[in-house]
Image (tube, rainbow, N blue to C red):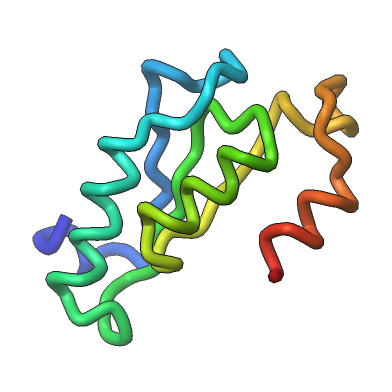
Amino acid sequence: MKKLEEYSCEYLIHAVDVEGRQSGIDKEVVKILAQYRLNENHSNSIPVTYAGGVHSFEDIGVLKDIGNGLVDVTIGSSLDIFGGSMSFKKVLEKVTE
């Protein structure tokens, strides 16, 4: 990831094994992303957004915990605006806590 920094302003990483399945996040991918931010002195590193598998507010909490608050998240098919069960409004509240 370090080699790509000069060509990027942010990373959007998709955990393709869980993407679109609403089956939970890939914790190992989140750990790797958090470690990248920690190793690169997160205040100077490129922001990282994780995508894939989020299906509950518990997933958001786990992502915050194991991501050390350094990994952002994007949620797709689990949102009510896309036919899922997670309220868009409540997700906004949760991720900005």
